[in-house]
Length: 79
Image (tube, rainbow, N blue to C red):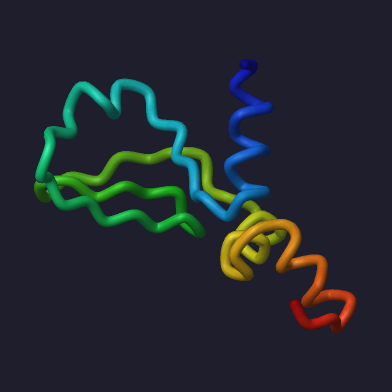
């Protein structure tokens, strides 16, 4: 699966995605992370690592729980 397709599918399902080069090398099981999606910063063990910030439209989809709930909200429909 192409990375952009994976990213879009994850957002549509309401799953936030972070693209961080080398991120899996530094993060260990049990680590606590802080993630600021608006600023594009991941905080880990006192350091900050930049990643592409999520656009406000994508954040709105995530905050609404995915694409379908987001569209229902925009259309004023209940689930």
